[in-house]
Length: 109
Length: 113
Image 1 (cartoon, one colour):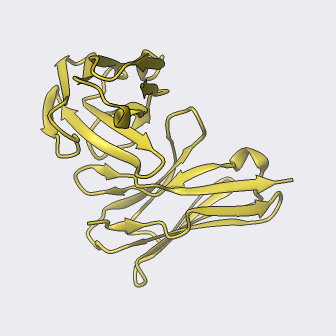
Image 2: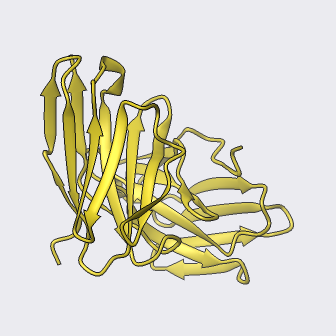
């Protein structure tokens, strides 16, 4: 039972442009939503989170939007940089985090 | 803090051999997680502990896999006997509580020939 889905396995964006990564979820009981980033040969690292009572959270170039009516979560990276090239996960948190396959972002010069 | 420490970083073994992966969580963290990453299935949760007690091992593939946490600063994941399909990167993570931010180790890349 996959309660959060990342429908795009990969995304390619030019440096300086906006990257938008999306997640759709089914369970309205989540307390908060997380984004993790993973570089090759490294473990995932926490990037940003948003509480279910908010609709936006911003941290520098990273902004997460939560649309509760659509059950949709998105991460915006502006401006995108080559160092942002990584796999991004939006694990959902019930009693544990379920990561899945993520979305691979490639930012090219 | 040194972060989550995993050893070995790389392991190459032959089918049928026993493999033991080790993890030292961040001091003060009460929850520890073992994950496996493969191309096909992404990052899968195998088992997690809270206060050294296994809470959910539903992700453990089969009886060949076992995990222990004898104390708050050490955990092992053992595969016996190992098979080629166990080849993957195995990550350990820890957090203060189960649903809080997890901090991952660098992973152990396992290759079973």
